[in-house]
Image (cartoon, rainbow, N blue to C red; front, top):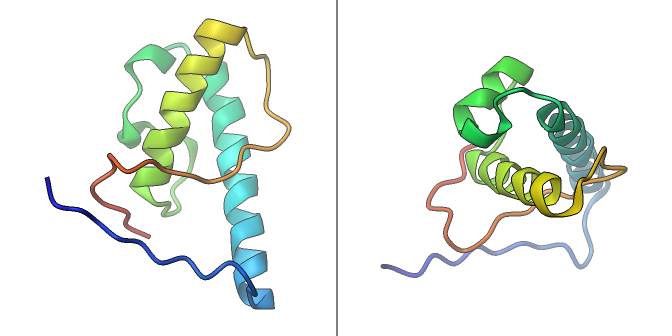
Length: 97
């Protein structure tokens, strides 16, 4: 499996990058809370995001959010998320914006 390097410049983000990341975090948190109450959360794939929103969102972030929601719901009985930061692991192969 090839190594994928992703360079994130977050040390001194511009105002535009800060606003974009804040918007993405808000969308991600809303999606996670919506997914918690979705009846088919255990069968969820990245395609389920289209039911939530018609906007574009990185599939790697969506997939990681689905994994986290499934885990938190099953193991910790989470009822809602106050804030769920956008993240993805090294196993994600694509990230389309």
